[in-house]
Length: 322
Image 1 (cartoon, rainbow, N blue to C red):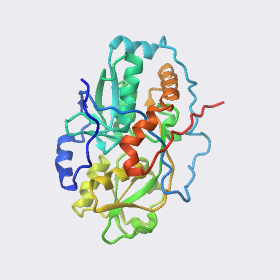
Image 2: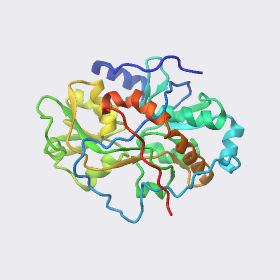
Image 3: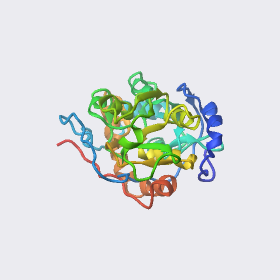
Image 4: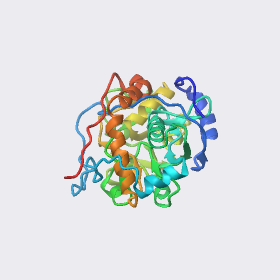
């Protein structure tokens, strides 16, 4: 089913509770057509000091799967024989993966899934959408519930031991989302979180960050997804969120009473996640991304992210081991 028309305006803050109820956080599969655009770019954030990853024994920016257009690999052949792509996505991140006004998945990550389905199956709508909270992404891949996950998923050394990742298709960084009242635009992440109740998405790298460094947070609440955290913020039950700035910018667009503050305290390279038992699919996806970076990515970025992250951008260059 094709989605006509392109995009939706930001949701009013008051509509978020209804959106949470509609989307839910139970990770149920959602089968529907979705809106698509062309490709999108990389976020470097508001620049400044970035804390390097503690584990330097691996390189999250380098994929071990060389690009290949071979359609005869075991996993690729199985998907083609099935005739539908099982894709794990988010439906809670505005402009990345969310339900548009017509109820269909839409956003920057959704465009990537559509393009993969078109390239592999000849039809961008041959997708079984499986909505996953952050904490269920790896399990869904390992249990073969999904073929791949396109879900603002940061490549980390730990995760690379559990799933296969494509080359990096976007780079974000963690910053704080806070109410405009009581905060200044120039404050740091530590200043924004100091002595405050902070909300993070369960299973996220933001949760990992606060476990290793508190940044002065008085307490940390882990919710199923970032949208649940935003509702908690609106209800006054938490004081701040820590999340990727690319996601936080979408939430600030949904609720103009909030703002993103601080410089990036981490780097978050996003990759498409697949099973480690499917190296043929990982190589095929890397070949797909080689072409996607040549226009579709930029077009998708301009449509979904440019208005909130600013201007035009280009995708990160592919990097491979060896």
